[in-house]
Length: 391
Image (tube, rainbow, N blue to C red; front, side, top):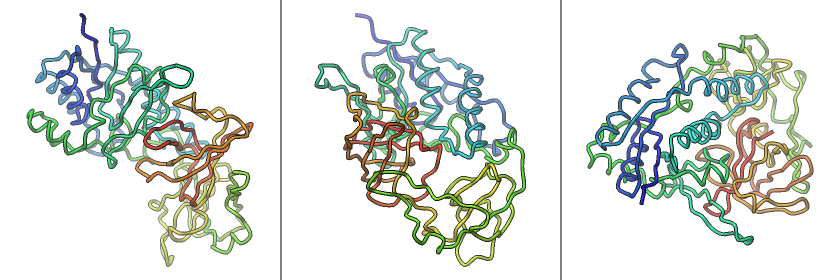
């Protein structure tokens, strides 16, 4: 019987290396593929964009395992789907999540389709998450996206936009392991990636100077930094828990005092502390809102400033995504879930409230720095069942 073909996205890191090895120990025909997605090194920090080194390490791993290997250049697709999208989102005053987008648009779309064109039955990655398949009440198989066994490394959040069709063609060989176990396997195999540090920064790019990156298309524009005082929020509820409406507070230039200047509101994101270059306050200043139309950055003193906190958020109807469509809730019903608004945030108790034009996520506890453009993902126990872009 012919072996099923799996194409592994070899990134040059330890996780994908061990994922490839584990597949070679099973009844699969394994092929390694390295994706090159970035050409512009003018905005990368020195020695922090080692794609050539990564490609070479991936090749050495494939050689050691005796599996075929090749490099593919997906940089044009990456620019169109990730980089251009990021510029557009920042220009609109939103903060995109390139890692979630990268998985949705590149690894599990462009790369997956390429792999299938090469005769693959599956693609595999080194993500710390798991998958299984159940049969629902209608007798249809449903692929479940489950948190990684290593709770400290769980990457299910980054995969929150995957579909049933994508999950059907995907394997996560290391999802049941702890990171320490993955390192141990790599050391025992004497892989070149065994002690390699985990990559950081933008997906496929490495560490980037974000202002330099954004200034390629978004021009600097001087504007005011306005500090909003604590007492501004008297009689202004942050959110209504009865309706789930996300009552985001809006500000005007007269609501506070000017404490400094900035070079463009689109360069800042809610919750940001560094880069404001304003001193002399008793507590550090945090960005609580931005207005890209009027080019104003609003700040507040201290990490407990009320402007940082909201209890509810909104996901527009066209931005709602269910990994499990059979769990989608109809209008008039609510669903208790656990949710997170950023990677590695501990799961928070929340209620999903669908309404005609949007879905509202109402948390038990106020959440800090809910940011437009980022993703909220909701879980039932260990299973990620849906997600959406925060409005």
